[in-house]
Amino acid sequence: MRLNLKFTYLMITILLSLVSNPSFLQQQSFTIGVKKNEEFVWNCNVCNSIEMEEIFGSSWDNLGFFENLSLNRKMKWKINLIESNTTSLIINVNSWVWKESDNWGIEDKNLTIFHYAVPSDYGNNLNYTSSLPFIPIWFPVPVGDYMGELSFSDIYDIDNRVLATININMAKSKISFNYPSKSISIIAIYNSKGILSSYKLYIEENIVIMDIALVDLPFYTIPSTIGLISAFLISIGIYIYFKRKNRAKE
Image (cartoon, rainbow, N blue to C red; front, side):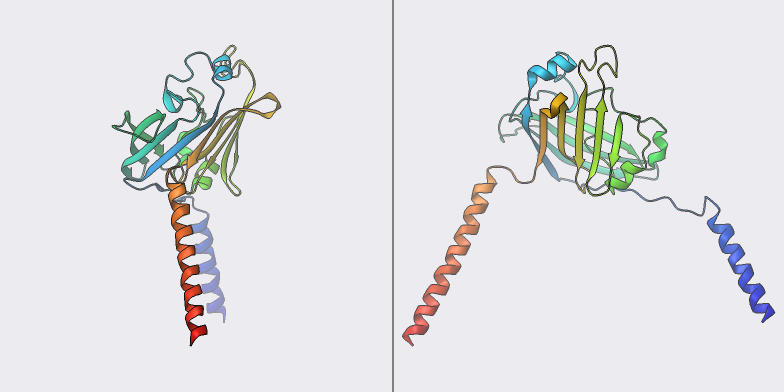
């Protein structure tokens, strides 16, 4: 009995020493949620260019995700390459920059986007205020867990309870003198693949001056999809009708 007790005590001691050792605790592994050749399209539902220029200056739509942006235009990404290792998660995309129609043609840009495989490698007070839209367009997955391990600056608030969401509350002149020229708020929501699915920028009184949303289906496919479903249901109805009619004759 004493031998068994000593052995049990020894095993518990060893287990506790292993668990208390930080190297024993494995960090969560993050991955890339998008696939090669996968495409994503965003639509601009609201764009108050006058307010955007007043708040961010005349060059607000010259660079980055907002380049060439205006109401009802669309942007497309096509994933060219995904690459991951112990330190980095990388995607390479072809980008079509805010077009007026779905006739995409040749891509406008090729972008390589990088994230650390370990969120803590970013350090403290992380922010993306060097350029609009002040948030990444893509995160590794699980996106909520990845965002939750980042140490953002005080203007960012992360809500990863249900939908992975970044909330930004930025006072006037927070970045530099008179930039932004008004207080703004931003709500950015990400889907399960880590892709930005909704972006809304507000000014006082909750007035939306920018609304961008990920499109699940191209608009031109929606009527055809509805048509196919309707035709399918009608054909079933006709089949049932004639089957019942034939049974009545018998």
